[in-house]
Length: 555
Image (cartoon, rainbow, N blue to C red; front, side):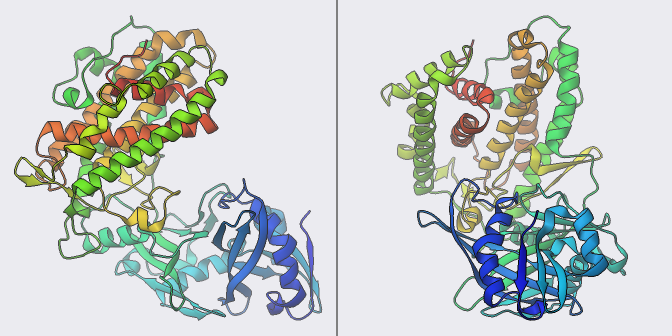
């Protein structure tokens, strides 16, 4: 049952007086905790406060833009965007019956009864957001203003009659709120707010208007919040909708199911003992080609698209937000420090949870902990020592550069479109600030992210295949490593071939390998901590990956 709020005046006064107090005190804290996009579920809410609010179109309806500050016990606070609508009569009944996830409260007052809901529950209000972007509308709130505006691609993407497109809301389980307009447009509404331009809009607009890279959703416009003395905040972006056959993770899982079915009849194998970079410089053996099949070609295609994306992001030398910058010894030292911090946190958590690990995983964990306890000259710190002490900014007579990158690159961030890929979601790592996500870095961070995603996929597929026959896991595990190694090699081969002359590419293989290993370590220690906290059965995946990077071959 949703709560009931009494409104003393007209529906437009819901943001005032006792109705506002009730919303802040009890109604909205309960609603927020039920939303997938709310990031404070593990914290106690101390207060919810209206920061800014005002009316939105369509004028014939009661629609509001609401910015909230949520303060938690302990002092931390977050801000959220919550557009609200008030519906009556048949429209309220329809929302109650078909859009239950968006309901907030029942309203009673001098104008009768109504339903307060997230504005996404109302189709007309959803369509009015597209209209506002196309007509460059601005709306004044109590303290700031909302500005909607198109990009140069708006007209070609929206078409002649956007109002005829059917409105479909994305699942309430999404981390952002999604509205689909037929198979033409997608509006992504950002709920958790941070000052500064969202990297997804910034990068998407840069690539769209510059026509530098076609394998992305093209950006049609955005909605921003402006307030004097603060940086603009991106509230929503409008993009082209990409008809697809699923994301890269789903595609890999489908292939891996067939792969394990096939190799379950094969004899045992010994995976290669060479690095991924070394494997990328040689052709896969016939046995690997026969076992893996067409997915080797798919991985190569994604390697090319990734390199083309990085080339496009580094193409404008006059735009200070995108012009490449030297990767300095200070950058190398910062990367080294970040690896150490992530590793120390993950190893401490691993040590604390050692007794909780299964019998087949605990020996791997102990071996890794022993590595971390060795002196720096012999332990795993040696693998990143060069970052802090020996890295030089000049590489074979050519400086190494950092550029704008995807920032959170994995198989879930690419869509399978026929026999190719489209790259999506340029927001960056969600736990980092906007400033951190906009920072330039070596694109090998993206490369490492995708290689780690292939490793996770190989084992996720094996877990699924052996779920009913766990005794088969050990026998098929070498086949998981074989798939990961040769698929990653195919990705690397085409990536390096496509980006070979780019300024962000190390000219020699040794520097490429060292920098790639560094980003792999940074990512893999993050995975170790994540799996310990969320999926203990998957801890073996990053453990195997770390030990392999150290030159060991886990039994």
